[in-house]
Image 1 (cartoon, rainbow, N blue to C red):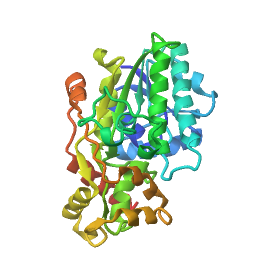
Image 2: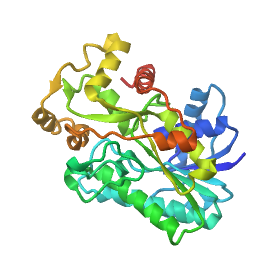
Image 3: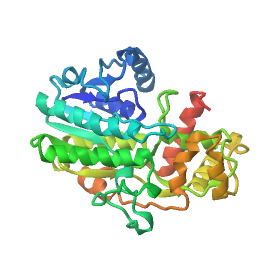
Amino acid sequence: MARVLVTGATGFIAGHVIHQLLEAGHDVRGTARSASRGPELDRVLSAYAGKPRHVPIVEADLNGDKGWAEAVDGVDYVQHVASPFPATIPKDPQELIRPARDGALRVLKAAKAAGVKRVVMTSSMAAIAYGWGDARPNPLTEAHWSNPDNLRDNTAYTRSKTIAERAAWDYVKGEGKGLELAVINPSAVLGPVMSGDLSGSLEILTQLLTGKVPASPNVGFCVVDVRDVADAHLRAMTAPEAAGERFLAAGRFMWMSEVADVLRASFPAYAKKLPKGTLPNWVLKAMTLINPPVRQLIPELGRERHVSNEKARRVLGWTPRSEEEAIVDGARSLIDLKVI
């Protein structure tokens, strides 16, 4: 079995990556901005696995060099999952772009220096499907790249993912040649949470189930289960043919109203809080003044972004769960943990 470093170990996707790595028998180390988060991570992982779990944590921040050499020392593979994903959009886009890009390069350079075999980097569908305006291909594939300069069809977050992934590929093709890189590009990640420390993507469920959205906004997204995103990371780590490739880990496009319908059918006790009807675009824009997380939906209004996951299925042997299962299991975990 291999020794694997997982960056941003306390995050939503990272927790599932760690869980699956441990289940597969790998030796796992993690990074976090504060090593003090280690005991809580162990508690969360142990509760989810139903058995004791311990993952040593090295303190390392995407914004600085400290800790990274220690983190990658003796490691065979790096799962670089850490990246800023805010609930609200910062006023300065560089608050997201800089740590995403510089952090990716920092991890890759440390991995190269330590003789790591391969880095699997978590990017996003955001690095593929944005900035196209009305000229979006249908479906989008790994051959496509977002245009971060088209600000009307981007947020600071989507721009940060494109810029960071571009920088990573440029590095391994140049200065970092010899270090293998594979990239996973997930869509909106739902599925079961391990704790109340939530990822921004789960705002989709919390906004709906807590009645914060009076009617369904005219937005949609491709849905994928976090367990399947983690599975794609593990497959991309060891499959020989995954080196030098990017993989869309994404399911089918669903309108917010469709997600609400799935929740309504599975959780009738929440039916009164779930939205009915469609929210006019101008109302959604007005809501951003009192509900800041909604602001990230503005570039999505009326836009359908369809993708193909054929490459992940073919090359990695990836078989994702249904979108409905991701939605229902995600909501159930939020309810069980009393997040909503």
